[in-house]
Image 1 (spheres, rainbow, N blue to C red):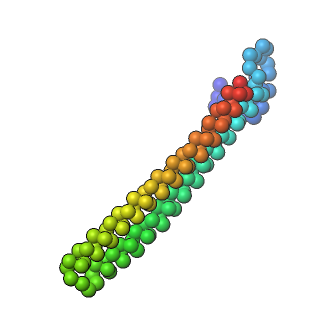
Image 2: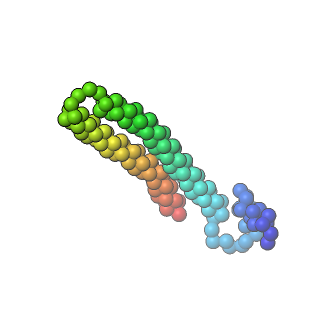
Image 3: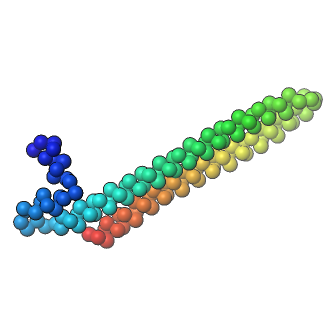
Length: 135
């Protein structure tokens, strides 16, 4: 069987290719429709996952830009007039705020990732449930 014969076997008319088999224990039309729906569900789940990744990358880019601006502001504030004690206190306060903001940003990205994964998983779970019902 050549590769072309193999590809022809799996064309949309799979039922026509198998029509010569007498007593075939499987409804080929239902089987091919089931497989089409499975493929569609995996495609949708992959698309959902890709959209989630794109949103996360966009958010990370925004956060990196904001972090650069924040670090520049911190440097300017630390270099401002004041006693060494005031500068150390100001630096500690700015670092604390920056740390808290970083933790909040990481949580937001983690939540975005979790939501994206859940949405993709939901698509697959719905298809599995429907597929078992169809069987």
